[in-house]
Length: 70
Image (tube, rainbow, N blue to C red; front, side, top):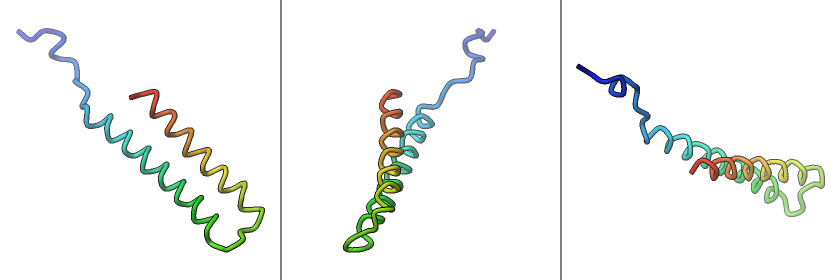
C-alpha cells in the first residue's frame, strides 16, 4: 500500500531554476533598456534620466528578491 507521503506531489527543482532564470532575463532587459536610453544620444535629455533610474531600480529589486530565495 502507498504511504501518504508518496501521494504528495513532488516539486520539480527545474521549475525553481526557471523562475530565477526568467527573473534574471527580465532584469537584464530592464537594464538594457536603461542603457539604451542613456546611450541613444550623445547628451540624452534630462527627462530620460528618471526613466533610466526607475528601470535600474526595478531590476535591482527583482534581483534582490531572487537572492532571498536562493
